[in-house]
Length: 327
Ligand code: ASP
Image (cartoon, rainbow, N blue to C red; front, top):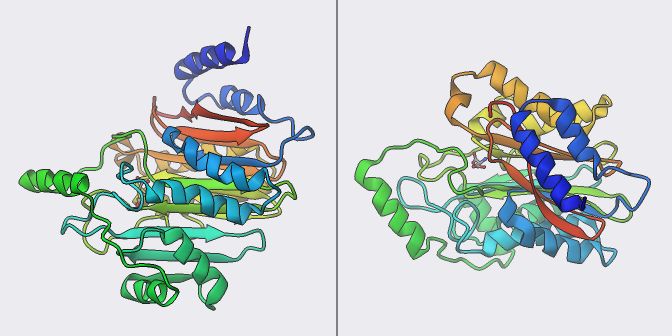
């Protein structure tokens, strides 16, 4: 049986076995073989991010650094006006302003982040400058904008006609309620390991559509939206940021892997922690994690069905359905 058919069968079976850790470990293990060509490798949240993986792979396959790869990768949805959850074209807050959050980490444990940043198309690159050019980790709002402008980033209008229209429609009822996997894509979180086994991660988002002005989610918070430790691996999150912030999800995933857990076990642990602690809130909200460990093994898991991810490894770039705990 060819591997694609086998995979599809496994995925269907996976639906029936939602929550069964062993099944998802076996699925992740199909790509494990760390001894053979595991590197480079890049993983990102959500199926539509195949192109982001391609941009990262371009860097990785030319012997480049993981940090450059994740930056190049997540810039793809940041620049895409059709992606309503990231960068340019992102849905605005309830007052009509597009506000962006992003963070990045390198193999040395350096980190940079921006939150509540407006009018800059590539917040991930500003986050990288914060990491490399300031003594700080995080800049916010007006200060982040001033820094970006001083670094030569152009000031741009990020609200597209489509996003403005969606906002106008939303205003009629002004009913704020996040919806599970509404467009089957969302924040991009990405983790890469290059040929020299350097690990880096990036995460970037326009946050929840029509959020309160000033609301910042998990995505720019190191340890919540993304975390990397070069000795262990990396993880990133998507979904309702409040649930990830309260559990410091990406840090938890990496710490589980540090204790020896397979990345699949580690992401499941973080999802189950959220479900156990916030049983009411998880009923209607999604969270998903992706992870890579130092051996090049991966894991992915969500609260609900519908979370998927893209993995580029051994010259193959594909979308996979993640397991879930609630079906
Ligand atoms: N995690 C993002 C946030 O809460 C949004 C998302 O991934 O849907 O801002």
